[in-house]
Length: 382
Image (tube, rainbow, N blue to C red; front, side, top):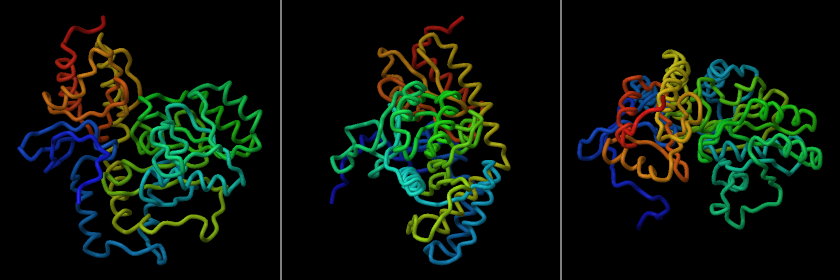
């Protein structure tokens, strides 16, 4: 049997990883500034994380949600404390797409409506409803297509107000990334997020903050949306939540009252997943990783803005997009194969930096030096 060939692959096999570095089968060391799509939040093979998972595996690896799992309660308490949402409720699943799928379903149960507002450039996942609110027709199969999704321009308050004025009583939810990842590291403005909050309040719609990539401390705040000073009704999270172990969740405002059977999952919230997620939060808290993400992120953004070759630097904390001109489209590959640095990309020419939240200044400087060489070192802005 062959693998189903849907991924364009770099000819690299990772055989060892530690902190912000990985090594390939030939022993070549790389700096990892992508963390496998923003997944590695506390560094590869973090000792506390490894111990937490190993100890749990030696006790019990899995049982279903038909029994009490105290680790889920511990995780909910710790997550409420670290995120600042102590009165919210936690539902655990396995992936970001599943988190968004359940958030949208929860919203529809809440107000009995069908229509969802999403935005141009959005990426919310590949499952049925999550992909329907994703702005990429190529990956929306005919069976996923629905007339219930309204796509609006990102950060356009007038279009948002007009849509609510015309269809507000039919709108179940608004779903938005605090910073669009696949869309090119584009940040929702404070006023736009505040407008979403006020319109959702006015029309009894649900504000869903997709924090799958932009959340979990990556921007210096636990949820990037919260820099607007308003709370969402539901926050979705995944990627960095388990540092590589598949775990995701939705944080749900107290106004939502659950009923037995409303949502469900086989693997969500299993013992190993909870151990991984608890380890991540414990390291984040102990090592002040949100503060580090903000400080190192600010440093990188400041230094990157000095390069005259860079068209624009976007993002906050350790979620950074570097927009390059077309003639520098080769830079991402050069960073990987010549300078041995993993980065991400967004089409057409945006380099995405999504490293572990404990990235050091020395690692940041290593990247900046390589980046200067890759863009030919023409000079810096005055």
